[in-house]
Length: 392
Image (cartoon, rainbow, N blue to C red):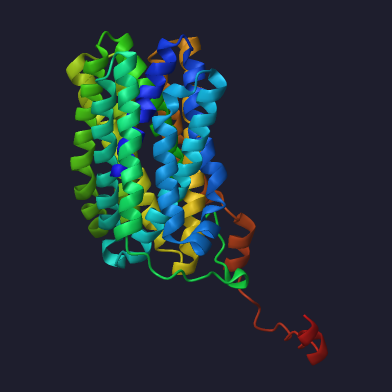
């Protein structure tokens, strides 16, 4: 929650900061995308960091996250702003992957989704508090103070991790016994990470600007985003509890359906109340993509393989978050504000459609061969010589 507070302060406030400095939506989207690119680039190295640095690596990630948020107003130029967002992304990977691995490792199988529901609850609560705090700071001086407070809170998180977090002994994964990531079999999990990342990156970067364009004040936009996120917080644990009982894949696909409906309604320029309801439904259901997808993935990997699976999951999420704000910013520049929701619908629809295609059209030749009976009169295949088997 402490880490997420700085993200909640920094992500929307950085977009407003750049917009007031005269940069267009495409630059704002690219700047947000660079943050997620940093997470994706660092993800591959985090399992190594966990084995060799232990809790110290996680604490260092928290402190670096805080410092890169606090220093954002000091970037001074477009290059400086991009470098600081990249550093914030690198440190974000150092922070998130170890935490998510610990949640997956410590969760009883029958309560895995519930545990990730509490994790998501904490993340969204921190983001909501950060959004409300940061977006209320309209003057440049107040915005600088908000960045500083957000960074300080996450540095405090590093101290909490170093002092109190229970860090179990790391079980090393034997390179010769690795479980393959198998993107085809785990497509719903990895696809959900990508789709949630796309929506999160696009909405965190561009939704504040959309609300300002609709006539809301900066404080009003911050309050609306915070209230929406509070609804998301309330939603997380019940939907996780439901997933443990009805089936995680079934509940996840239900969340896809509600998200698509809410985003479709937002394309029509609704009034303030209706827009708020649809934003809540889209945010609440799409935020469940991440914990449910990670819980499903956690069922299929042993403890030694969890850091690698978690790193790949987060990297996939961040690839979506790189594409989301960048692509959506370009679409908005060409087709207007409402086009943001059309781009979001496309990012959601593509995952269940691809799952159906992979399920019914994957490996047709292998399936046909598996159904073909073996003739009873077939002669047995002679056994290979012992020397050849040993060489093989």
